[in-house]
Image 1 (cartoon, each protein chain N blue to C red):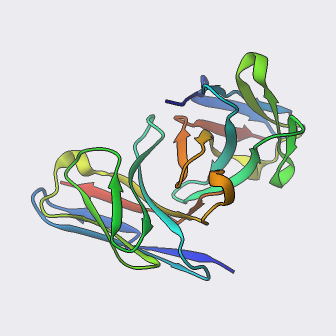
Image 2 (image 1 turned 90 degrees about the horizontal axis):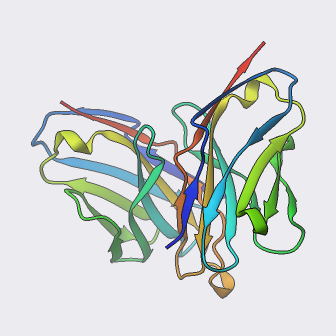
Length: 116
Length: 114
């Protein structure tokens, strides 16, 4: 069966410090990978998605970047955190779909980032 | 572009009572519709999805949803709520694409009282 692991679960960082959140998927190949941010009362905001190694698309201009160094690894980074980067970050994967029909998103447990 | 409206931010129901969570969507073509549930501090889990066909969709944990094109709605229902159903529920609409072009609503937080 497929599993998704995301870490760290919680992180408290000072403003201006770097960030690295990691996500790995097991039990599947060539997944689509996603980073979402969840803020209270604002639902889920798609930050980045990737359809293959080295292929990253950004949905929202921001202080963050993403990389996909391996097929099942997705990393969210920042060189200098801002207060506004605080939030709950969710990694997700989905299988490649036939006919471009969207399928199910499988989410990790999330990483809560607090920037002080 | 698609959008989703969940008009109820918080809902409180008694255990054993029926539940209906509202969702309205905006999309120019036949939508792909989803309901996800999130327990506190956790990721999201798919409850059910609608792509086509029968407009009444059955999901996990005893939930169902009905697609009403004329009302642009996809409301989630459960006939008898259990305390373990307390969570946040997200409606989402998807569009065809090489990746999941899924737009989420802001969520409805469900509280269940004894």
